[in-house]
Amino acid sequence: AQTVTQSQPEMSVQEAETVTLSCTYDTSESDYYLFWYKQPPSRQMILVIRQEAYKQQNATENRFSVNFQKAAKSFSLKISDSQLGDAAMYFCAYRSEDFGNEKLTFGTGTRLTIIP
Amino acid sequence: EAGVTQFPSHSVIEKGQTVTLRCDPISGHDNLYWYRRVMGKEIKFLLHFVKESKQDESGMPNNRFLAERTGGTYSTLKVQPAELEDSGVYFCASSRTVLNFNEQFFGPGTRLTVL
Image 1: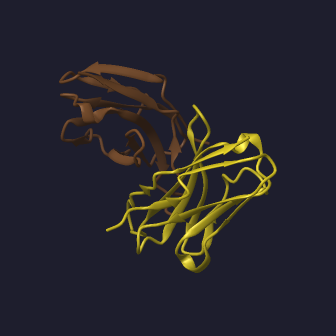
Image 2 (image 1 turned 45 degrees about the vertical axis):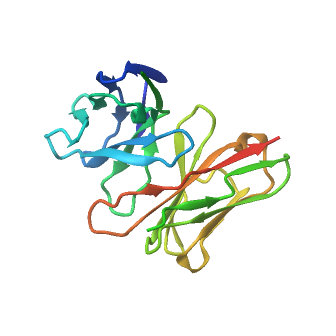
């Protein structure tokens, strides 16, 4: 079974600075997806960024980028130029690439606080 | 386009009572998923519907939980009888069926408290 570990329950960063959230995972599969989801306070969880395991290039979405290290099974999220609206719970998640096996396996989350 | 909606947003019940949670997926989404987050822990998968059929129910904790999706539209998750350890936030998500990656869109969740 796959597992996802987020070792930082809470993080804080000054507005406009850069912060990195850590995530490690364990799997015996070679093809899979990795995700970072964001859940702002009292709001729905939304997908921030995804990475296909077969791609060597790290995914980037505007101020959000990942550092995907497949051999080390590490998948960290970097948020550049942090903004107040980035304050949220961030969940790292894994999904098999097998069609029909679409369940997401989540970590325990990291609560990110932005300091004005 | 309306997002995934869940009802109620909060529910407080006593141990032994029954509660039914409802999820309305995004229109046209054949896939519907239920997840649960117990306080402070990870979000765990419960089950996955494709239209009205259960594709994967490997995460359902026990037979006190019953999920249905009649007609392949909205879904209900019934807990009967509820136990203290059932407290948590229940999330629903939906997605289209596509050949490659299909993004799961999440609802706001239902916070269930069992006293």
